[in-house]
Length: 78
Image (cartoon, rainbow, N blue to C red; front, side):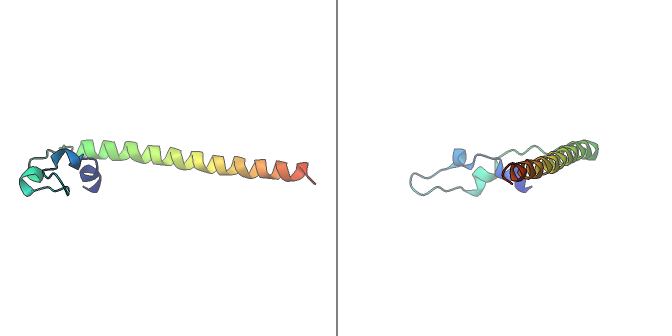
């Protein structure tokens, strides 16, 4: 829910000229699209999980390469 609400451009609904303000009517008129079926939500979650796993693997590889680089640099100046 937080992600859905944080992606809305609330400044579009600003009704004041000085200090930004919203009223409940404006907030209630905002349409939020939520996947209707559990199957669709599961597919989205699985897709995002696989992306997170690939990012984790890439980060681990990058850390390994950085350590290797640092080791090579230390050997150059010994």
